[in-house]
Image (tube, rainbow, N blue to C red; front, side, top):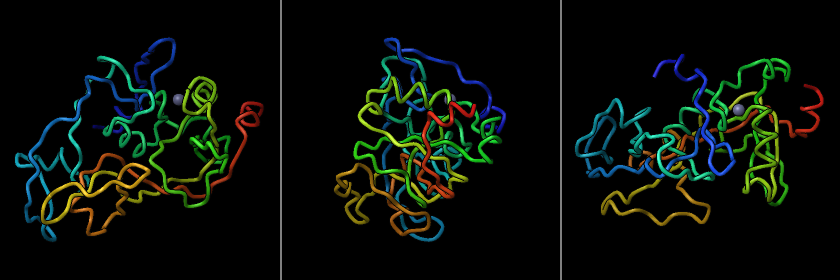
Length: 226
Ligand SMILES: [Zn+2]
């Protein structure tokens, strides 16, 4: 994928009156089966696909889940994340709702910072160095989302951040001997920092980054300033 295709305007899809976020998966975007095998690669033993294509199945040496790409086909899962579009959004700082770049006029106006909005039922603000799988969001989409998104209506927090530093991946880690899935933590996926030995036994499903230069803000203030 070229940088141009990452920043090109994305088609909008609606479902039951709601705009479907760019990163939301659709029912036709199934996880594709792939036989996982133990293999010895660069740096030691780990897992791979029996029919692996290293240029599409791996990123920075980490094995990624295989998920069909068919945006707009079937039924959207609004709170979900499509593995490749999440990675694309985080890597290129694309708005997770409209898929547009977040390096626009607002980025300049906010002192070269990106806007992040996260679910926070307990009202806890985003903190410095916070680990997240969230991609940034543009102001228009943020305002629409906190109003329309059933998950955000329960509580959310917004912050401007100077940059998102790649941290590692979230996914499913397998036992190095049995290749059985290790028990998942209560909060969902296994979190594996880049370079950790567990990386070699993990099927990545999300890019994880840490947020820096974080300042909690009010969306109303940003709207007024715009
Ligand atoms: Zn947007």
